[in-house]
Length: 139
Image 1: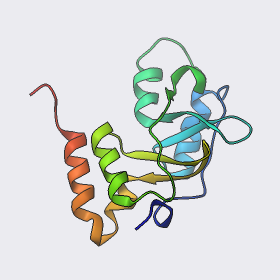
Image 2: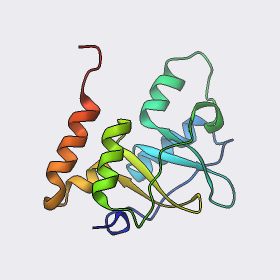
Image 3: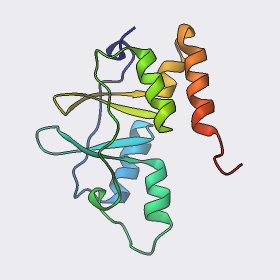
């Protein structure tokens, strides 16, 4: 099965000047845990996750920074034609839960670990990836 068969395609992007409170509003409205940061042509520049909001906004004294100040640069991405198994390996190897799907560096979708987990044939792979993500490295 290919990534394009499971990915979400109705993706909201923000630009680097979007304030953090607006990003949080987009996440709440769309019930998502990450928002890609793109230029006007749809090229991905970074990604803001719910974790970025907590660690880079809530835990600092700067009020309402922009996406450009808090985004994770150079996010790990996947191609729509990539195999789901390979995507699951990326989740695990990079300890991430969401993968922007790109073609020619333009965002075309988003694949989450949850998207993989809902397919019975990939439940074990999703579980393995989640286990790898959740391993406490300090133990």
